Image (tube, rainbow, N blue to C red; front, side, top):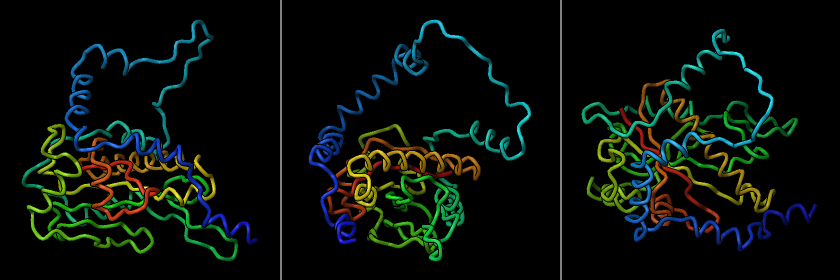
Length: 276
């Protein structure tokens, strides 16, 4: 039993894994060159046509036709329709902002508890997102810009109480804009309408929640889980007619500081803009 308890206090992430996480970070001085690289790829017909449609070349194989989706059950048909509607919206409406009700529905559909803890049989709380070992290392933060029922600030979404907890309040819009420019390179990039987005989601990972059990392999599960949550967010936005767009290019260190991360095992994985 003592050995099991020590798992919570022993180092569980190797130095080489921290090196990888550090190497994959994006800093302010790299933003311009990184953006130019992305633009070069996106503006190339060759890259977009050939790479995006590439599949593994196997040579001759027997092939079997799959059935069409013409006669799906009602729930499956609803999911199929949402999959067709799922897309990235990069421009947002200046006048029409999302409400607190919109945000509440968006968060609940994206990430929520589906089964409460049962102490009698030691089943941990289950959520709508699969997680390695049921450890759920991902937290969702909300940076509010234009949702008028909330102050401009940074919140953490408490999935257990269904509340937003304010962890940083901006004194005015100028301070908010400076934070967005520093963390999301809002002024340096023109790929998303940052100024009109109602809010931004940030997916942060507490890696030790997963790695204390799975060691370095737990990093994989955390990254996979973030992808699952983002997909759920896209489907939620499609169902609510709310626009969203994932943001992969951001200042890792600055964004981590904004959400009050202080440990190297706490990392930001992705951001996402939402609006109408």
